[in-house]
Image (tube, rainbow over all chains, first blue to last red; front, side, top):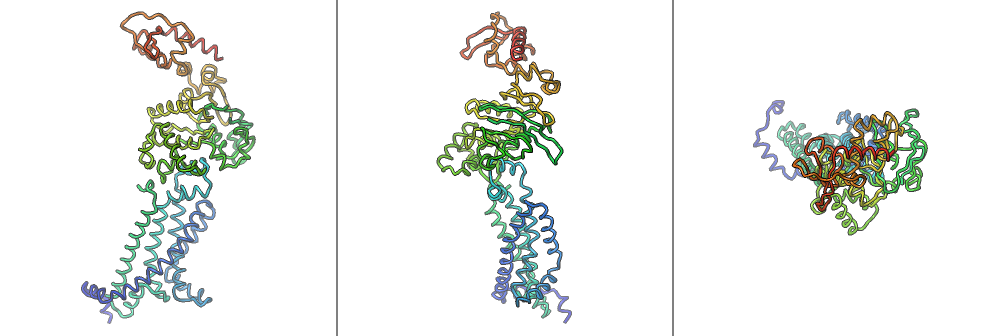
Amino acid sequence: MHDNFRRCPPITDLIEYFTSNFTFILGYTWDHIKLVGLAIIIAIVIGVPLGIYCSVNRYAASTILQIASIMMTIPSLALFGIMIPVLSLINEGIGTLPAVIALVLYSQLPIIRNTYTAISNVDPDIRDAANGIGLTTFQRLYKVELPNAMPLIMAGIRTATVLNIGVGAIATLIGAGGLGGIIYQGILRTNNTMILAGAIAVAVLALIADLFLRLIENLFTPKGVKK
Amino acid sequence: MIHFNDVTKVYNGNVKAIENMNFTVEDGELVIMLGPSGCGKTTLLRMVNQLESITDGDIMLNGKSVRHSNKIEMRRNIGYVIQSNGLFPNMNIEDNAMIVPNLLGWDRKKMRDRFNMLMELVGLNPDEYRKRYPHELSGGQQQRVGVARALAADPPVMLMDEPFGALDPIIRTHLQEEFLQIQKELKKTILFVSHDIDEAVKMADKIALLKGGKMMQYAEPARMLNKPANSFVAEFVGQDRVLKSMSLYTVRDLANALTLKPVIESPDSQNINENLSLRVAISKILNQEADQLIVENDNGTRKGSITLDLIEQFLHREIKESV
């Protein structure tokens, strides 16, 4: 039985697996996209404003970034594990909710840090001109700072997304579904073809997501800011 | 009118950046604040539009205290130009130049007309630059747009922080001259920071020379050059101050004050226009380009000739008068 693990499956097995289980894999992929997509949207809604807040309050910045860093150092398996007893209190110990929460926490560091750095790095002369011309703080933020910070903010979101697609594979252990399910089943059945197929699907999804976000980034970055 | 009334700025409770500053920039005047680094000239400028707070005293802008004005509203009524132009990279040239009118809610038609007019004024083709972005322009072009942006909502007062400081000497000279032409037409009340004495002599109606947060002398360029108030002023304006003061006069000024010498036909003579600066005229003589400079008016009519002693005579007279 253990010999099975040592044997690398021939590429024909892999192709065979993909073609005969196409709809099955697609279903898992769709679950994965929903899980990560939901987590990233929530992470952006929380992380970008926090990053902006950090850029105006240096004192809060160090605390917030430290907490986000600590989140990142917790091993993903442990983070999912911690969610079970905490959320069991509201009967949501396993499933989508704990997985989404864990992924949101995981994405905070790249999103907050990139937003904070991007806005802090806007040329001080440009900020000075914006103030001197008579822009309010809010006008300065959305007319000048955010558009100029856009490439770096989007880079943070891309990092978080790719990271979440990888970490999301582990979420299957707490019953959240997704491509991790194929890998996990492969491990249980000592089926290397399944393990590899799941891993490849995760990697391809990450690459496609990155490409897709690059397109979005291109769409949102003002022409004058593109180099 | 900008009136500084006992203005004091103290940092961290004890570092005095500006001490009891009192002076007035009259309507339509261009005043240049000059001084070594750290003298407080930029701080003083930034106190006018409240980018720096005032510790003590007050600045009156057209009779209104800046300390008690709404900052945002006030800033929109002041043209602000900085050395690095501060154009917004994310906006095209038209949006950059029209940002204040846009904030003030002007309609499209009015903004377009204003943009076209201002771009012509600063010497750029409006249609060629409208949709371009700041990084596609040269430093000189960017600064022209910077000036257009400051003039956009036709503010009565302008603050300029070394606007031409980052440009190469040839472009700088061009922009200085063009800006003087614009100012002749628009008659804005301008407070201008510079560290370049030649720029100040050339452009200013009055120069405010600062050192260590204190006013050393506040006077017309000719007076400052010919009659420095103290040894610091004398040193700052330079030992060649008499030569510098000559750029304040044209050959016509000399011709109006003194009788020109008759023209002697000789191969060593050169024709000059009466609008030429006296500084250039004397350098032509010293450079031995010609023994005799024949003065012509715009129609080419000869008015006479000038020589070294005539210039000397004129300078003595002017220095006596300005004192």
